[in-house]
Image (cartoon, rainbow, N blue to C red; front, side, top):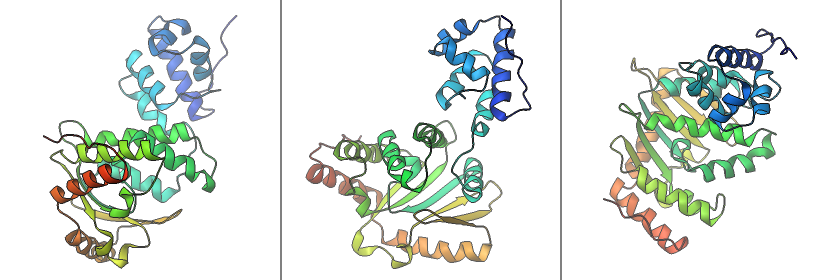
Amino acid sequence: MPMKELDPAESVAALFGAKVRKLRERAGLTQQDLGERVYVSHTRIAKVELASEPAGWKLAQLLDESLNASGELVELWPHLTSDPYPDYVKRLMAMQVEAVAFHCYSPLIPGLLQTEGYVRALLDAGQVFGDWDVEELAEKRLSRQAQLEGDDPLWFWAVIDEAALYRGVGGPTVMREQLRHLMEIGKRKRVCVQICPMGRLDPAVLTGGMVFLMLPDGTQVVYLEGNSSGVLLDDPSEVVRHRIVYDRLQSEALSQEASVDLIRKVLEEHHQCAPPELT
């Protein structure tokens, strides 16, 4: 039976599927062959090619590698489906990819420092604000952590509200893993994690988190995040105004060493867990 003709102009998912089929046929592979290479069934490959069940992030990566797509499939994947992110968040994420330095304050563990369990717990709880694919969004968020890897990673400073260490996001097991991860990742040369004690928290930041991005040309923007809304500001006077608040907050935060000691204490006293040995 001849295969169904694909119309790449029909949707991004159809374009992705058409590219997969073209690359697969060029490589002389059947759907069964390709499925074995990327650890899925041949029917899953067929659904991807027909755009009836678009690939997830991990599958897109495996397909790209197995078909020698030189990054084409990976680059196309974020556009496969609509997502719950408003335009200002998508603009922020695009800038984040280009950023060379990142400063943030967060009442929770910042996204680039979150473990998979912590990410999924937040997304599960957040479905009260909208019905979305937790698996897909978790993969997207975790994939952005690659910015802290490689030969030239992002410079990252995080000031975290002390209360975040005690919150039961995902339950005790998830929190133990998250706090241990926070201690480990804080050892990296380009990552600075500071805890701001609850008694020193600047009232000006109680409305939500803030993120400052420095772009390669020196431009800075600030993103102010609320519970289910946010605003991205690039006006220099507004950036300076909020940067003063951030600097004031950071001056009250614990040093990196004292922050590690506090996380260790919380692990031992509130999560009954021996912290990792730091070298």
